[in-house]
Length: 176
Ligand code: HEC
Ligand code: HEC
Image (cartoon, rainbow, N blue to C red):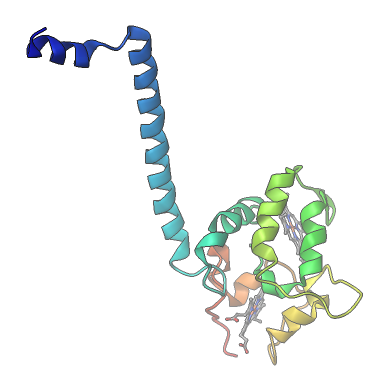
């Protein structure tokens, strides 16, 4: 056999079926790679500027993003630190929500979101758990000497935190 024949066999020796499946895997690999690359670009966009109050570390970005998708459509997203960890645990597992019914969340989504809320909040020291910010000691502690509006609702955050609509609670327009 000449070397020319050898090369020809090397290149075209694959059966048409094998070639088809190889090109299928190539396409899958390419699109996976592309979406990973795009996903990373998106994650960086969230990472900088900081999320909410604290800089968010890379391992919590997916959880944070899902929290925003599920919990910032009807009202502003609340920074985890304003309520105790126990409150978040109840809220995330309950679809009966302050008079409205939330769409059912998969077990996976519940775990994913708590994966963000837990490390950025603190456990309650008392046995009664607040479900309103006005009753939350942590919310109060973050607002020492601030004259808060009454009633305090989720729209009032925007009065002083102009960036609350895009999850920025660091800046305040309020002359504190
Ligand atoms: C379908 C719309 C909707 C979605 C989605 C939603 N909420 Fe709410 N949320 C409401 C309404 C309505 C209230 C009650 C507002 C009121 O009474 O002032 C509320 C109130 C709250 C309050 C109480 C705030 C206070 O002090 O009065 C918290 C905390 C809260 N939501 C957290 C969440 C979390 C966490 C999620 C995601 C799991 C979520 N919300 C998703 C509609 C929604
Ligand atoms: C009357 C104005 C006012 C309202 C309304 C208000 N805040 Fe604040 N908030 C402030 C001020 C001022 C500070 C800074 C207080 C300090 O550091 O002494 C602050 C601080 C915070 C912090 C801590 C920020 C940090 O850098 O550590 C969070 C979180 C926060 N607010 C969330 C909320 C949320 C959520 C709402 C709506 C339920 C809200 N605030 C409503 C004025 C307000």
